[in-house]
Amino acid sequence: MVTINNLLRKSENSILDSILVLGKLLDVDKSYIYTYGDREVSKEVEEKFLYLMQERARGYPIQYILGEREFMGLDFYLEEGVLVPRPDTEILVEYTIEYINKNYGDRNIKVLDLGIGSGAISLSIAHYCKNTFVYGVDISDTAIKVANLNKDKLNLFNVNFYKGDLFKALEGLDLDGGFQIIASNPPYIASKEIENLDTTVKDFEPRLALDGGFDGLDFYRKITPESKRFLDDNGLLIYEIGYDQGEAVVEILYSEGFNKVSVLKDLQGLDRVVLGTK
Image (cartoon, rainbow, N blue to C red):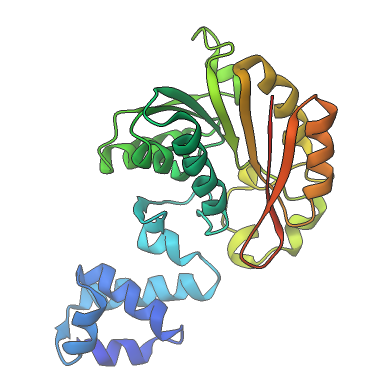
């Protein structure tokens, strides 16, 4: 048998990735790895560790290997087939939570999340705004499965997920004019740019969640006009966008009659969110 330290030395990956993966396999935290480096590990753990580190070396996302990702202070289960939640998306969620608290207080409202992925946006809003009922939609079976697993993990009852293509998933639910907020982090990478993305993204994350068409704006053009049917008077439409899409998405909202359209920037000072009211 080999020890923890011997096994870590066999890895050619970053020490942090190696520690996280080994901790996952042993079901221990980082402090255990640091403290008990002379402990022996089984042959089974050794083989599994070396295999996973080979996968990591070829670009397989560490979040899929670990099966989890922290977002908005919550732990989300992840698996291949759903987009890995990014810190930038927290800007959209934080604004939405503040907007709900400021404008609705304890009133019961409805929020729609289009393109749920792991459920990060939907479930974060549902967790921090208990008076809100969240409807989440996705066309992917994997996304619906993972989001429901996370719903159960977080023990939330004020959210439901529906499978379908954008608003078509809501047919028959009598929700016309029923939402105070519609949020979406849609696919927004231009088709021709996908091959230029980092290997961990282009080769392993779902293209369905990345490809926004020729110029990356397809979903903003689809969602914006239809959203007016489902938003109540003065309802908020809020999007995550690519760093260079602010001006274009602002114009889409204005062209559909939205008011008070504005852009929020990320921590790097780049355009990241566009919002407007019906």
